[in-house]
Length: 377
Image (cartoon, rainbow, N blue to C red):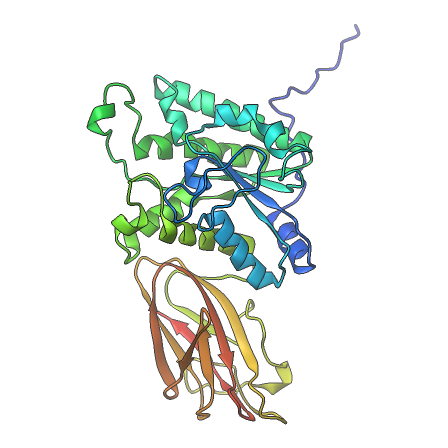
């Protein structure tokens, strides 16, 4: 008896991955534009940030303090690339079911974003207002996000997923209690963000858990909640800056993540702008925390950069940053571009809150190359 082969259903036909964050990073290092778009609602658009201009479909976004712009600035600095682009594709008051209907207009050939290579898919906060119960919310939202994922693959664009920015809605505001019973933080976290985790696993997509990071920012940073999220729904300038730093730490593989005691020295694998390895001293019996350091005399007295590192602090308290060197009085450091002299063999530099820091070390105008490392604790 002859039987017809069973065709693989659309449900199980998973598109092949096109590219990854590391592809983007290496493209940027060689000078490519390689645009990445972040697609979502007002929390992506930048509502509540200084200078916010609501986006128009198909037009290049212009909000200067939205996380997309701040991320672009950080990446351009780190990759030494002034053409790389991060697109703001957020639209205030929108949801995933609406997003499905404007994909061609937003990313098609007539759009400013027609050359998008990757799309970070957000949404989920406004979606809870469309449905009568949690089951309907889950099913409707999941279907819309899957449609966006599959559209991206059909256009040779790599999708990835973002959980939502944390919001300050522990319970439903009194005036909305009857009409929108799911207008709480928990509903977004337990339904929309869980859907994204499931879809990331199903499709093999990279996922940035922005909800977890921004919840930590609300809980553990020293910045007041009023300054972070003044209207309880949209992050302001400080919050968007932090989101940009989170995304940088995910996109740049050079980032050192410090969630507690962290030592950064010449054996750290992600430092840059360093010294030739034949300048290093490696004592047989270390006398302090540093088992390798530089104590060298160079042939000139030019001010040389002898270490740089991008560090993302992801701790539940401020971490104390200390710098260590030998006897040279000229060695100094920069933290996010700000000079800091070193007082002695050990110098307390600062208390570092949640976020991204660029550490640099210089010899000063000296022939002495003298530095051991940093400790965060």
